[in-house]
Image (cartoon, one colour):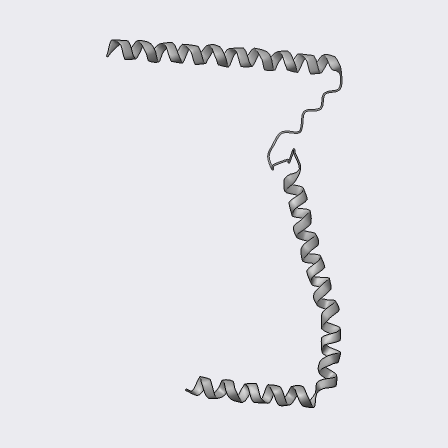
Length: 108
């Protein structure tokens, strides 16, 4: 009950204060709106920057190696061949695992 009565008193005092100090209230409001716009703009810019940063195709994580920079077509070809060789190795290992699994199933 005390909270209710306190709330009613605060409401009445607030309305009286708003009527008595209407001019200063408008000055405060006029000064607060640009401040709110500035703070909102800073927040929106930060969130936009964060979103752009996350949408970049290659992001560098801490402790990650430096990005690979290919300086010549020969170097690029060397890396393509290495990638192809590794793909073939992976396929060979997959086949070996599948064959072992089939042999184990036949033994059971």
